[in-house]
Length: 137
Length: 286
Ligand SMILES: Nc1ncnc2c1ncn2[C@@H]1O[C@H](COP(=O)(O)OP(=O)(O)OP(=O)(O)O)[C@@H](O)[C@H]1O
Ligand SMILES: [Mg+2]
Image (tube, rainbow over all chains, first blue to last red; front, side, top):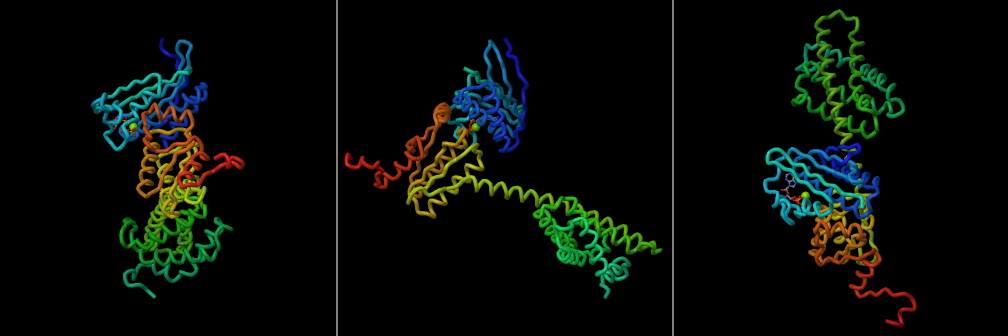
């Protein structure tokens, strides 16, 4: 049951402003499929976290946002791609409160709790892709 | 009068002895394109200054414009470009001010049968090309500075710290909070606390679309900094969707006072100061 995708849109993530732009794009998509206000806010916040990680740790990259449908459900899929250093220890990175920098260490683990599907794919020296989905209830 | 270093340089001598006429012709050539937006007197002053600093280098090959010999020209052109950028002239209008001198000089030597002079004019023209490009670059830098200034001003404008009551400041946060904006707001709030000697600050986030870890971190740091300065912060206007998101993210606001609305937060602050706000008629009941 591969979801049918609907016109993906991509945005570069190279500076702080781009994080804001990604957030706005995700919000537009979330409103378009009429996610509840709570779900919109959760998805936008997750996107904000992941886009910032792409920028700060991945050294920049891009975000892809699309509407997907599967089993008669509609949702938003957002993915964040970089060709940065990758994440050596996934479970550490996903632990609440762990940060290799000066963050709160809640972005990755928190984003996972904010969405319905979460997929983290990272290879040291190659880069990182994080994909999230929020379904319309 | 003939300079020492340029002695014998035909073009330099010609330029020097015709300074007044050349500057006048230069001003006239440019004035027609910039008509109405700058006065002839301004142009005359700027161009005379430029012309004077061009004379000592008119015999050079103009290859190393970053060198010491061109320092004064560079700074004059930089000033000119900056003021043009501020007056909203286009980059090509700005650079063509420099290029316009070429035609003026060509006309001066036109008809003279002097191969050496011709060679000198060519190399002078190359020098002007280089200076025109410098102008272009300086213009672009100036525009960037202006845009940056304007967006900083916008930042300041959109983050007002207001005094709600004696000793109580409030800052309403609105819209999409990026790192830079949150930081500016928080710095302004801390400054205002000191300036006004206030002991309460209310950060109202009713208008905020999302609170992520970065915004939360700025908020928490501000509260801690305010405490060190002897002031208490209250965060108000946390809407249901934001509250749920903050909880799911795992952010803990600890012992920071949070209130549903700005009014509640104000009441809370006043109560701590021993001021009780009551409705008329309720007074007796208390
Ligand atoms: N795209 C990425 N590339 C490389 N490393 C990453 C990437 N994303 C996350 N990490 C690593 O995972 C750690 C945890 O990420 P997380 O977003 O949870 O915390 P943080 O960004 O450090 O702080 P916060 O997001 O709370 O401000 C990061 O400190 C970083 O070391
Ligand atoms: Mg993060």
